[in-house]
Image (cartoon, rainbow, N blue to C red; front, top):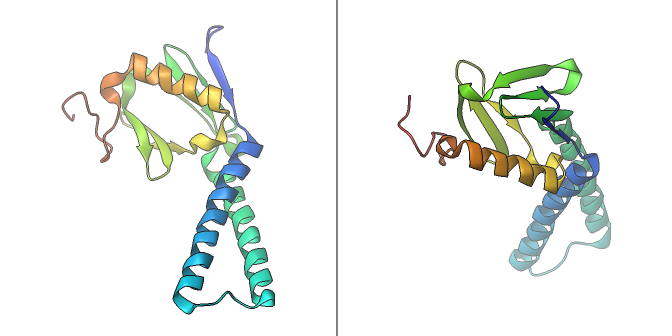
Length: 158
């Protein structure tokens, strides 16, 4: 990479907050639905155990998301992207090989020619950094933006 490259650092707090709140929201909706179907709230001891279990589950799930889908850093410029993953893995890819990019099932995917698709969690980065990255992709590579099936929208499939 060169001097004009942009570096996106991950955000542990944003990742854990986003994932934990999502899991807790699903748990709250489930509790309300349970109340609606059974006509009463669970006993206080059951409620406390359920709440503790849900909090622990959300923290474990957030840790797994952090380890599996949030790289240490992403550095990009007009020529390519360098993704420094966990456990010492780093991938350097050229934009000219970009096939498609987009959000798919809660993760962001980058698909390059002749290589495995890269997935990561957008909530793992600061909002301003993520917006700048998306603006860069939309401005420089509008034809490679993926549809809901992962195929580029603006050009014929290869």
